[in-house]
Length: 124
Image (cartoon, one colour):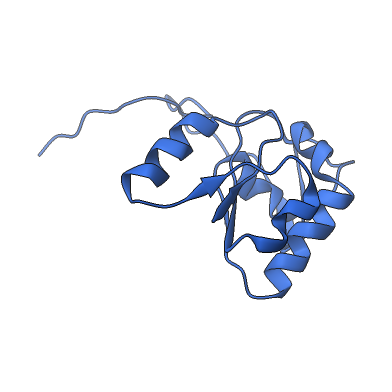
């Protein structure tokens, strides 16, 4: 089973649909101790880095324990940012710390909206 972490800042429905499409079994643990039997962990997320503060403590310890035992971990969007030590968005908060360093805001270019959300057209 793959554990899909719900810290109230992610689009769990889309991730569940994607996992179902490939035949994966998924569950959403309510407590960190439920990660003990997870074969993998996904941390999704949308929004500001401060939303990850609820993962500090027992959740962080449980996730690091599973990763330390060789279980794969996937961060999506904000979940990926949380894998770093910290973020420019909320420098007072700590991330998981699997990757050293800080997530910084992308430097904008003239005419390019940051963050970029939505669909684009491709021209051949």
